[in-house]
Amino acid sequence: MLKFLLRPLVPRFIAGETVEGALAYAKGLRSRKILPIFDVLGEHAQKKAEIVRVMGQYLELLEKMNQSNVKGAIAVKLTALGLDIDPLLCYRAVLRVVQRADDLEVVVWLDMEDSPYTQRTISTYNKLHQQHSNVGVCIQADLKRSKKDVLALLLDSPRIRLVKGVYAESTTIAFASHREITQHYKELLKLCLQRNANVAVASHDPEILAYALQLNPEKTKIEFQLLKGVRDDEKKMLVEKGYRVYEYVPFGKEWEKYIMRRIGEGWRNMWWRISEIRVR
Ligand SMILES: Cc1cc2nc3c(=O)[nH]c(=O)nc-3n(C[C@H](O)[C@H](O)[C@H](O)COP(=O)(O)OP(=O)(O)OC[C@H]3O[C@@H](n4cnc5c(N)ncnc54)[C@H](O)[C@@H]3O)c2cc1C
Image (cartoon, rainbow, N blue to C red; front, side, top):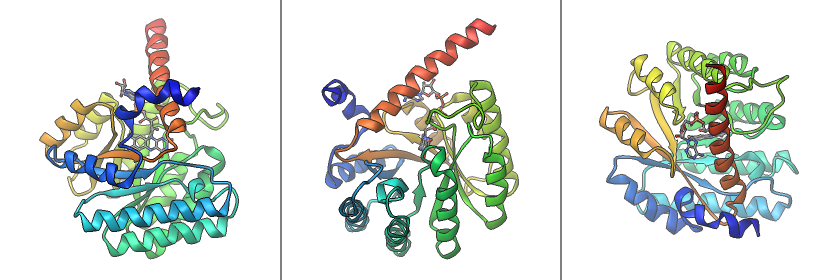
């Protein structure tokens, strides 16, 4: 029933259910000078067979990107590779994907899931990053711990994607207001750029994009990442200014949770706007 209700939103946010569909979509991005970040949808694998299947899909994706000369990056959720059920197998699976991606000069972004996974995701990134420079990690500005995490990551030439954070977290560990999250985001971004890190600004918020541009970053050190189906106007503006722009391109059959998160952001935005009017 839920799937039936959400289905009309699929074409906007998802690039089909197959690798071929995602690659075909990405070829269309090329004419807009936008690069894809492919994400195989799915999370919280509960069986070893699922881990093997997801790893296989990433390896197939990498081969097909190479064969069809599609440049871009990939994004991985560690729970899709078994972090909940078998951390060692999860590590072996993500390592295999990262190794093959490294051979093919493809960057692998570790998406950041909700707070029970924060430390394990950062630790996995650190371990992979020791041997492979093609790995990046996502850091969430809503989490109060993130400044400490960024400072630690900055010690070793990191590749960091900054986001606001999409998961509902307790106010003991996370900022709740739009203002605080945006301020924290700006602080983290400034820190990354001051320390010459490779940073990806993953936001559609015009205030954050304007702030990033105002810092006048070196074009080789910054990239912008936006989601498929959101703010194409901002993507175009950034391309015209000569920045590297990536679009997050999810595909696969398990799209419900992803679409629910996009709906959640829509509601959150509406609520933030209402509360800002109320305090004015
Ligand atoms: C490339 C990329 C990767 C991400 N990876 C992660 C991750 O690994 N972990 C994680 O926790 N979060 C991730 N996120 C989500 C992120 O945390 C935010 O929830 C999301 O980007 C919305 O915040 P915003 O900065 O765009 O600003 P907002 O203030 O939420 O939005 C700014 C404006 O963008 C538009 N907009 C934003 N979201 C939507 C939407 N869903 N539908 C329609 N319009 C919208 C609206 O016009 C809105 O006013 C990722 C986001 C991007 C872009």
